Image 1 (cartoon, rainbow, N blue to C red):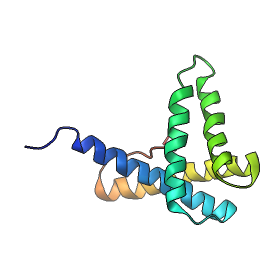
Image 2 (spheres, rainbow, N blue to C red):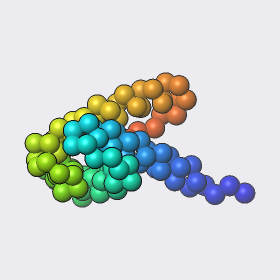
Image 3 (cartoon, one colour):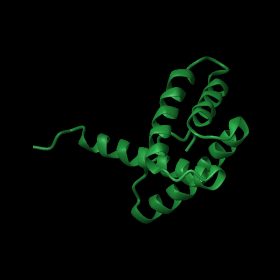
Length: 117
């Protein structure tokens, strides 16, 4: 008898790994940090920060974006500008990874930990 939420857990893990991969690729390029597990934890913490702040009416998404970049700034060297560049690069990387993965495997997954993807 299958457990009903196994599919949800698998989808969450895959989306988290994709989000971590996007942050890893961007951070590797911007600040030369080569640690995938660090990127996965950053994706998880960034998603948590986004979830806790994005609900605020009118300004929630702006606050959430600042919090998300703040998590990247906290987890990686280089300051706010490099954190924003890592975030932008992660967003582009996530789009590209998902374009390839979803078109080949037709999974329809997202990138957990990278907002808007």
